[in-house]
Image (cartoon, rainbow, N blue to C red; front, side, top):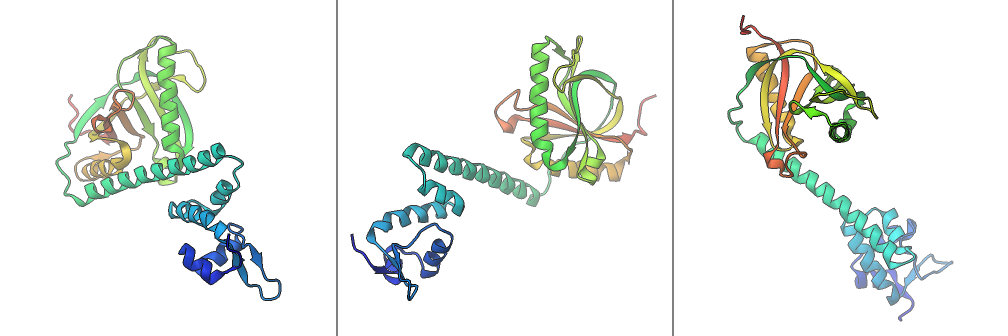
Length: 273
């Protein structure tokens, strides 16, 4: 082991700049083997090169400094591997989100295809549902958990679904980032309150309806087309926006086959007598 390598020599051996080595020293990530108390010069050893190589690769994967320190300080290989695996999982999740955002942007740049809108009258239905005031940033995890709980309730209580699951979302949720949301499954049978699930009545409504195909990452584009249609062709009225999940993750694991109907409350001048 060669002792007393200057920071410049160590920089050439590791391909890390002197500035980076100084930063790693300041944050406690890589301590020099020796620091001259009079001059402040830092010295390293060749035995520290493998540690630098590990640090460099972890930082290339955007692992935070605190997590890199935890990896280097791990008491055994199992703990070290668990920390690295957790970071890789986070990277994969971020990558999936990036891919979804790229696909959504490509769809936005392409001329929109025909998106037929139909007018529909829906009658009141009895359902098992979960209602809660939620923050907009929490809607997706809340929605996923609530729908899962409702499907479990239907199975556990032997209820018979009479239509697709759905959701109601008050305007405040979009306008002020917090509002009431309801997810529901229309059913027949006696609903016994359990957990958050309760018997609810989904009210009648007149709707302009459009169908969104695929996962919900680009659903805002479909909402935009429906909103533009309502502005140009119908009279919007107060009331929650609606979603009906004709095919979702409970029906097929393939997001390309998911179908969601979006309903916008309107005044129907074409309502049949």
